[in-house]
Length: 511
Image 1 (cartoon, one colour):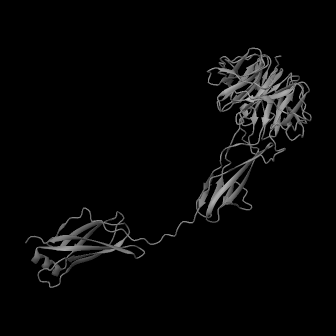
Image 2: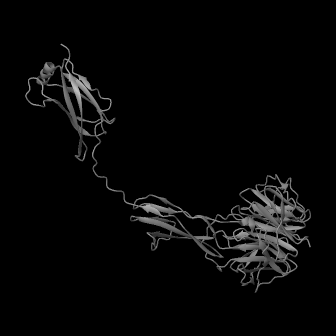
């Protein structure tokens, strides 16, 4: 039997609250259309079910469900009353949301978008509406271009900027832009069954949208790219007036509620059947609809450390990245983060903030534990090295580079000549020219012809402007050319020296 029904969805939550897990177990919730209750059971099949205390909230033929993990709230639509209501997951009661300005006549599926600060739902006969989570009212969404004929379930895809819904009275899956600009349309569902569809859920990882067919006892799907779809193999499980779906991509399952058989059922997401009915011991199951999953956080990328790499540096740890498949009605975003720093594999006592000043050399890591009402999960960063830089010691200067220097150097009539070479900057040194064999009027094998001291310029090129003594000049003129070895000694600021030498020829000027 076709019902004005709805589905939930939410998207990434941005707020971080200092909450601790309320019951620390993965759960599945559903609305009790036949008993005006919101009920739950353990997702692992162990039962552990119960009915949520809803306090002053309206519960009149509840349909669509959605969870705001950060706020600790579960929202629902009331098919029997024009209200959007909520209760706290910790069982402390609830209330009704201010929906002034929005259509509520009557209500079906619902989707929550904490990051966008809104909750969305479908109305009979032809409206998709929203309200602000801060209680400031709402309005109706522009759905121009799309079919809106008893929209019975909504799901949002914030990354794509779209909202999808099932049309109970038109047998279509439709969509529009979330920003209110319309640009709507109807999705190509190919050979998939679309018979009084009640509730949609988006598997963004697979690029598919799923829905329950109240009029055909089938769970169906279509590709978001418009290339068609098909029906899910539900062999081994119950499909009887299904209302609402939830897609657990990580676990490889699709869940739905069977209104007339009072069961919550599932099948394999890979279309291989393998289904069954979930144990709901302890919970009321009377006309169940629109199941949603609450799971502990699941990490998708480890935290990273940034900061300096020397002792005394402030290190900062990111929160890491966590799964948030709200569009699939699986709610597992973190509600709180806890930090723990370690050095060389051992936890540092008291280092429990997202930043830490590294006081010593070592390998640092940070562990981030994300928690919500269903439990906690930890991710650890890659090691981050902090080391004291070595004290710079004296280093020997490079040797002089004689490439490009002439092998014959002319001395002018004023006894002057030039000699160039390359050297490391900021070095001092001396250059000594000595003959390499006996010369006339000299009995010594080596005669010092010239000597000078210098400091290298910033460019690292040294050009020595030298002048022979009168005695050396007379010797040179007598010999005309003297082969001489120039020895360059370089010294750095630490006093370390290195030497280099080259044989060149000094040539006297013509008479």
